[in-house]
Length: 352
Image (cartoon, rainbow, N blue to C red):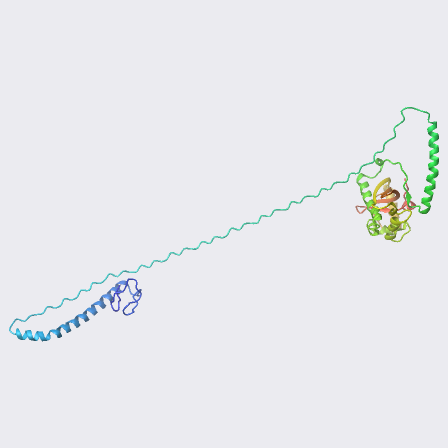
């Protein structure tokens, strides 16, 4: 490509002229205007060159012409040929083709989010196994196969009864004289199936009294106190002439004659219901009145029983102790109060 200013040839695509420094890459004029300017510049320079060459030739040829003129004065004038005008071939101008770079939109790939899988823990419902209460089996003595004379048997029984009665009365008197409320166990004949309590009520009573007796084994007055209604606690301690739970339990545990400590180490306890008398509906009002008088507490009693119970303590030795408890339901809960045999009439109750 040629510079539009000086006409110098430059490499295709050059932005500035390598001769005069003129900007030639992209001009504001059109391609035709650029070509016309280039041609005009070339013709102008060619005219100047021609004029200079003509002057130089004329000046150099003047002496020769003068000599020739003198030599050929008479000759016909020779008209010099006009030098041929140099023909300038204009180079084709190639318009630069601007290729717009292709813009490729970046593709944004969002990382897949993996939702955590929550596994619900499997809750296993604990299986409560109801303890099996085994009802003692009462075995009826077999009847004699052959009839024999009953006279010797009757006489023997009379003698045995008299001996046992004498010894039993002496032991009973010695025990009740020291403390009439704390009776030694006697072999009561009973039929468990005839008890008015339901199986659930029997298990509830035995569970509560077993906790009371375990508190005696542990010599723990607080544990015993927790199983007795607060309004009846002072009354329970007074059954054995004590003022508080600690002295009450200490007596039952450590007394030299009656305390379970005398039975040795590793004590265990079981409960045996000897008798149970249901307080009839018509007597519940009287029992409620007795609660108000004895405990200074209004208690709505839904159901109640007078229960004679054996507490069976077993260690190196074993012993059974009998006492009376009031087993009653109030506010949908069962409670136990130790009342002793001397307080039965206070609550309008009678031993079976």
